[in-house]
Length: 292
Image (cartoon, rainbow, N blue to C red):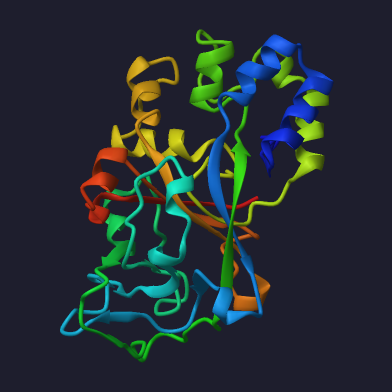
C-alpha cells in the first residue's frame, strides 16, 4: 500500500491541496485534518515533554507489567501530560500525570511470541498506564530479563495531520460506497496527489493524537477487525462503524538514538475509544504494530 500521510501547518497543506484538487475538494479535504503533537528528539531536557526509554517511575507498590506465561514488558516511553499543550488537540488527554507505555518486545524469549491485534491472547503484551500527578512514585529498575532502552528526550510541537484517502473518514467524505481500505476513483486517490503528500512529509515519527501515520493500511481498520473478531467482510458496515470509533493515543517509530527497531523499521501504535479516554480507562486501549 502506498503511504500518503503528511504533517505540517494548515496553510502549507492548503497550498498543496489546491495545487492538485479543485477548490471544493481541497476545502473538504482540509476539513478532515486533525491536530496532533509531533514528538522530536531534543538535547534540551528542560524542554522535554516526553522521553523514549530509560526506567519508569511507577506508583509505590505497583507491579511491573507482565504478560503472564511469557514475561515482563519492556518500557518504551513516558509522556508528561502537564508539559503538553493538550488544549490544542481534539482528544481528551489528561491535563496532568504521566502516561507510561510498555510492550513485550521479545527480549525475554528471543522474539518467539508476538503481540498482534488479531490475537486476543496476546493483548496483554502491550500496556498503557496513567500515573496520577499526586501518586507516590519511585523509579523502578527493569526486571533481570530486560535491557532498558537508552533515554531519548522528546519535545512536542502541534501540527495538522492528514491521513490516507482510503482511511474511513476520507472515504466517507469522498466515496462512501467504495471498498473500505482500498483506493477508489477520485482525485484524492490520484498518484499525483499521493506522491505530493509523500514528498511533503513521508516520515512516520513519534506522535500523540491526530491521525495515525500508518505504515501500511489504516491502523483503525486493523483494530476494528481485531475487535470484531476477524472474518468481517470489508463491505460490512459494522467494520466502518467500528473503525470510526477509535482515535490515536500515541505512536512510536523506530528510533536509532534509542536503539529501538520495531520489526523492519516499523512503528508501535496505541489507539483508544474517545469515551474510554475521557473516563481514563487506559486499560481498554488497543495496540498494533506495522512495518514495511
